[in-house]
Length: 190
Image 1 (cartoon, rainbow, N blue to C red):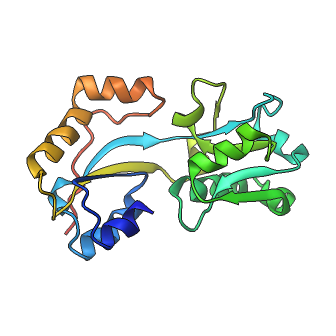
Image 2: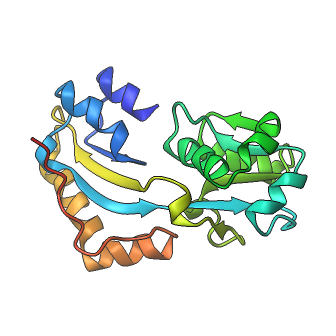
């Protein structure tokens, strides 16, 4: 949603994307400064249920409803579907998957009881008993920060991104469930 808003001229200064694929179309449309791209974290997928009854992926076979974000529009939704496919569960559970618009909404479906369990961002459930899914079950969620070309506060936006990459910023991100890449490089592409 944010990438579409940026394409349509939203007055943002910095875009913190859930993955690198949301940024590339913005680079091609000259909406963001490609030299400002930085990986600020690696997102992780987690399994979470309000009841705590779902302790491993195999438990999803007994769920009546499984919430994930829309795989076509949400990076964590795409990763959640990959988890289900690569673990061999997709054929068993696909009819019981409920798609939310966003990762947060998938979590809310499970939190409210409208879904038995969700596959969502670990950063949303790390402090509520969320269980990390193995990294190899989905493509990496390289979370990218990038300064918008039309930003009126480019220096402040770049400074905030630099803060996220600093020891203090990395510590803050780590305390909120993000996996970090030491010395994450700028993503410069030809």
